[in-house]
Length: 111
Image (tube, rainbow, N blue to C red):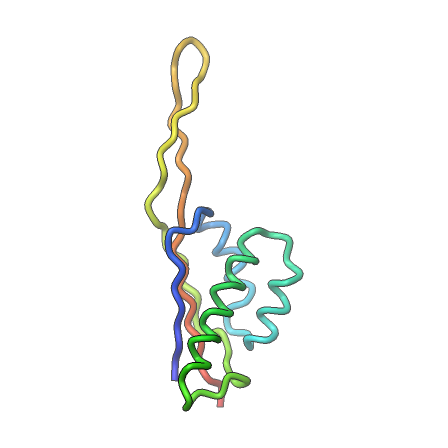
């Protein structure tokens, strides 16, 4: 049985989140959360919250054993970018893109 949790419109670049997500994909949930707790990246904290949310979703279903869950898949997609402008030299301006992410975490039971 699979359980998932989704976090949308997080203001962090998808490439930064994918680097951390690659490190925890396929691991048991306890190991993944322990590893994320020691990572210095900001995306590790965000990813840990989404994994904890998926575990809470699994806890609501009576037929799923929470102790046997592992991270089956993590998908990080790009969300809409916030457009900002910054003044530059000689009266010009430059557009700054602030990227957002959509994170989907899928947990599955390991037999």
